[in-house]
Image (cartoon, rainbow, N blue to C red; front, side, top):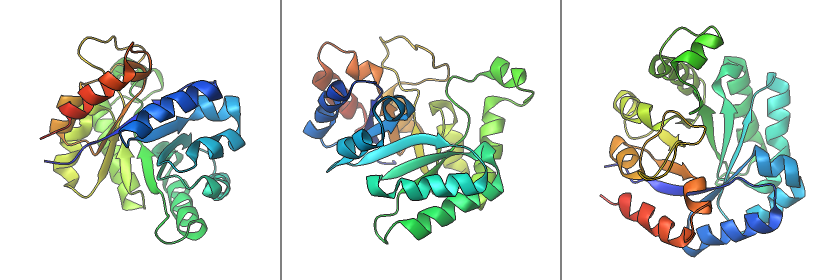
Length: 233
């Protein structure tokens, strides 16, 4: 059974609140996710401050021409993220440029895990058709995964519904980071391809990303402990 870790999503525009949420993760040794909402609202200095002495999944989903993505990754080196994301739809040249930028701008032993984002958890069959993609979400994920892994990513971001198939296809070495996690008694919000922590763990997730079910709970620390208990073999 793959060991599954918990990442707490720090999705807020409020630096004080972000620190409070990060302290919840600190109490049980969890990684935190810093995404676009916090980064754009609070700025790069705040990101570096929040990342100090913490393991950070920097989820900015970089997607641009190869040179721009490479330059952005070089600019992220001071944050020292444990993981960072690019969109696979940027294509092979962009992925290769991202790989090269990671290898050239981070010291050995401090290189972040480069993750390719497959299909967002908010996307379903209808949404894919609306952008002229006429495959199922699973088929699209598998196609993108093949492309990204061939040209240099270390792992993938996918919904829980694709984890088991990807794990079977690529074995234990590929890192699978999985958002779209909801507790059984919590609403799905804007995510459509979702799963409970226990089922994602059983499917083979390397990491699950959880935000609102923890941060909006009356007792966030209790929810963290409950999720951790579901990630045990």
